[in-house]
Image 1 (cartoon, helix red, strand yellow):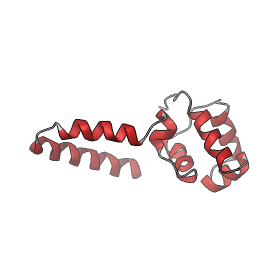
Image 2 (tube, rainbow, N blue to C red; image 1 turned 30 degrees about the vertical axis):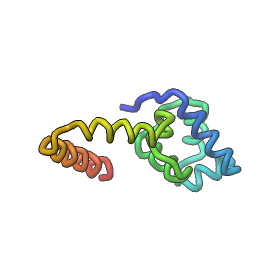
Image 3 (cartoon, one colour; image 1 turned 180 degrees about the horizontal axis):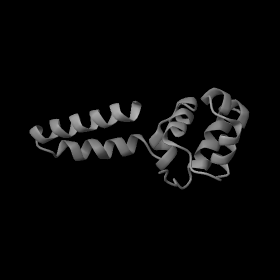
Image 4 (tube, rainbow, N blue to C red; image 1 turned 45 degrees about the horizontal axis):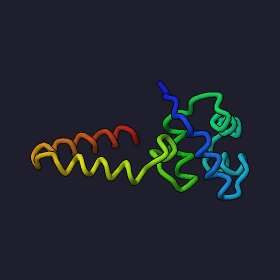
Length: 106
């Protein structure tokens, strides 16, 4: 199930325009269809996680930035939370997150 990420379409269009790319250029670079890019920027449909990842990679940004409008600050918040977790539990959480990342990549 896809989620709606408010403002993602605007962030994608702004980043695309900064590169002086047309929608066709982004579609080609991300190896997705032009109609998918048009749907994302309009927004007509919610893109899949795989599509968001391809667009983020093509625009040299993070998935978090496209979805939420922030990335480094968000990471800093996560690090702050992790710094307050006891070391033994922190290792378990890190293993869990690593396994989730591996699942997401497959």
